[in-house]
Image (cartoon, rainbow, N blue to C red; front, side):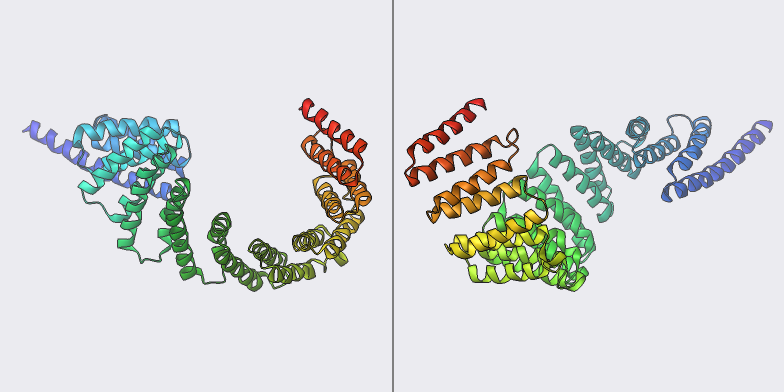
Length: 429
């Protein structure tokens, strides 16, 4: 009879402890959800001491607590401590359940994330793969599985296994499409990573299509005039510029002008910068009249600052001068180059790469018009503005250009002199 009374008392104590355990775990989880990971772990360590005594060191409860501690360390980026607890939890879970329990899958998930953070991507792939297949086996929810496939794809990308990365990013996308609409914000993460993959393997068509879908989703969420579109618009602009698709590039920069005009105002610097990019697009596509129109609009905006005595106005004038030079309208080209020179002098910007480039342009323009003495004068001004130790390549090119001018001028002695200077500098390199 005493034996049964003792057993009954033990069961009552066990039941009471179970209730306390659940209450304490609930408090620890609440701390974790609030981002109070240190407070959560402080409580979890106390729980761990108790469960080791009551349930044993290799019990489900012990593994569950260690998994929670490992998760908290993961969130505080204490990866070594996280790995320590997660590995113990993994071994306990596996000895009890093998591959048939949600907690095991969650543990492998956390391990995979830690391994990835420690740049142990091969180990991350092993753990995340196990988690992914286990979650499918126990029919986990699509969002949970998609988080695992997303992390798995990332680990494959880091190890340059791009085909596998694309496969799992597409799985992530498909899983999320079963839960959300086709234009939901939660599709943007896998789509952006997919775009990176396609760019990496130079699959231009897939890259463009993915970016356009990202744009479509952002427009659906934010509207056509939101700055939230800017990141994907910049990527599309770079892509269309590199592939010389100027018609599409024109549409992108017109979108930027519309966005910045509505958000910051039609005369804001961001609007002017977008106009400048559009003008450059027209220049590249040889639509010079349109290019000039926008360059002048940009100049009109910039000239409102300090009566046009500023570097932005100088840059706009330089663009116009270059465009006129391309059209072989040398008079207008020189007129605008001289305006740039005047601004830079007033700003005391007569040293450095920008001024050297300007002097070189004016010199070249005069050389093409057979104004040889003027060309030499501007080449000499370029040399004076150089940091000769840092800009030896530029100096070599200027010497060669001067030699070419002297040759056309019929001055053989000077031609040989500057060719020799260029040759000596090349030997020093």
